[in-house]
Image (cartoon, rainbow, N blue to C red; front, side):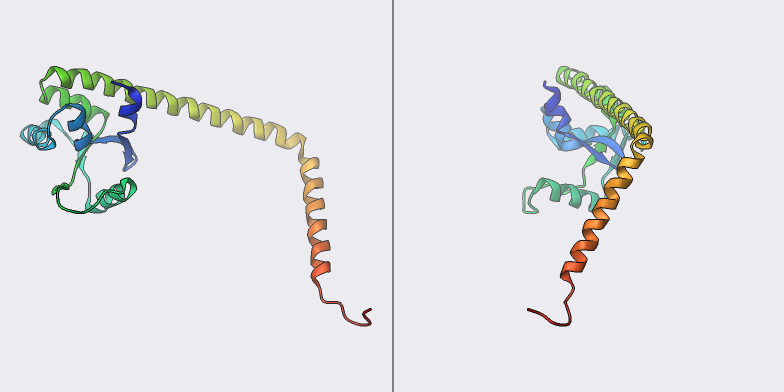
Length: 168
């Protein structure tokens, strides 16, 4: 299983990285109703920080992003969103070899995303440090550029004024 395929199925909802039940069912090669049934029969294993049901507005927003239709054949129930811990808990509920293999791939994808986010954060902090360091050294240059920009603006404002008096 390719990490890119899994990454495309990870969404950010309520500030958390989650996977939706129908995406997980597709990866586990089962139907969504069987996945949901297994979760409901083991509901005590899925606290709110492991899994939550999308609200109607969240689902509508997500559907608009995917450009899916509201016609017959769609879902009748709001989907479940599983956090990384919820996906790990699914492997205890769905006891198939495919579920175990898929869960390993999904965990790798979550770890990859977390590492990428951390490295991105480090780069952002380094850029801010460089900005602060060199901003002070080039303050005079910025002031000169701003002066020239304002001078050009004043000249264009004068050109746009309607001249009064004798005209040729």
